Image (cartoon, rainbow, N blue to C red; front, side):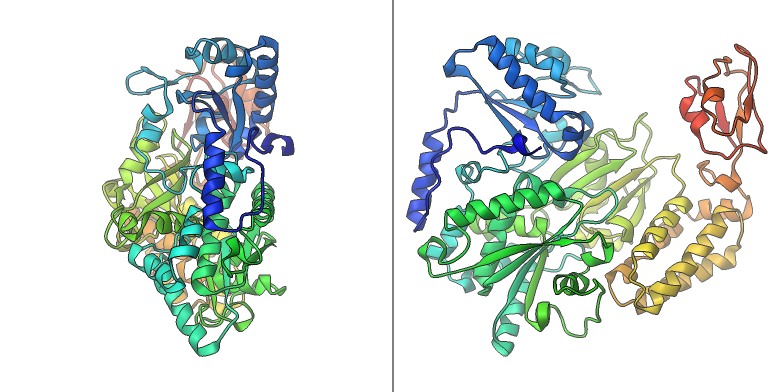
Length: 635
């Protein structure tokens, strides 16, 4: 993987920068060294694409170019980029400047790409995206609905720059916001600009970022310095990978945002707290830090301004609870990552008891955009109370799995059905889980609901970090609620009684429901227990843990009653309440299900209908996945 992220060829020489003017001159030199007509082959090295052969594609592309003996003036630059977003269509490749978009590329396709596209400027049609509604081929990236309907601010660079090239970042406008702040804005003006932008934290609760910074300044006046700034990169929600993509694909944006925050608050030291499970993100951040130090954009006397700031990376050990601010702080301090009571806010007593500002990756990545373009520009995007854009990961029963960025307040169905392409098969989605394991499940009839902090809270869910899990009719809400509750029970630190005992009891009640046990009175007990946990838990993990249960009860109560009263799972998921049978009219006797059954409970002669021994069947569903004739029925 290391070889895949070499610094861009033809970059201007790296040198020490001693002023904003030198930074601007350096940017001009980078831009002048680039030929806008020269082809650039941008290959996605996001996690999904890399796992499907991006490195092999890059090598095959280079070999195809060498074999073709292309003239020096049109030899393209092959660029390894971060996640281009359209994960379900990967591996992805974009040929610029035309913007030709290729999907599901394989190494064997590279010769045709060189011959047709690089030499002749014509697309390889079999690799083009086809509109699922019209069947028409779409040549360019910007015309594909998945990209066309987005407003990319945080994700703007990702997919176009080499994340390991500071020259690429500066050439796209990077570090200009830092230069602007250091030369023409006081720290007070920088804080004020963030306040006026209306930016709210993208990590969960949506607390106003400017207000947090202002509170930290007030705490500094009382307690003095030092003050710390921290990036929360401990993304742990199932199905969420927004922060990972940003750190991998545009690490300098996160770093520049943190430096700007440090300047505004007068911090000398900062921390990047990143999950150890994100090794590529850590590697790219380390490269970014090293490059920034060489240019004097990080470290002592940045751009000869008199302002000094440096940062280090702390690796999280995989504890979900360390995404909570106080648990994260105790982890950085070298202690067990357990939350502590928030009688005093972190902006007053955070790391080592000092004023500390903690924001998540996406929040910090927004800061340079706001400083560069102004608060008025940013506040004009989204809604009055939820300004700007939000990055979402779309996973689950969705055609277009991937990352999208849209203005705050965009309707849920715009995100799920237009950008996400809807549920496979064309049926309406059953529910959307927003906000991760502590969020809520929203039903189809709320598809027109705006997706912003306040609107989601009104319907019982939350923004969270931005994960969206889409479900269809084959998903059981009791099973979904049980899954998230088990996850949170396992990840809870167990420090407070509401979490330690309350989540366990909630899980036990749901397990009974999944087996057809329990009563309506148990539903009331579940709701009462959920409220008690909300009121009494020590940290946000506990206070928000009941959300999946409460929202599924609110919107899908009839499904709970079917489990309890009818002893049935309408979705055909809960094993104790379902039976697998073979429809003799549809079964062709192909024996596929029989050969795959781990229990050997399927019998029948070849080309004749088979049967399932219900007593031996463990309801694993392998037979249903194997059958090509939809002959396996669930009752």
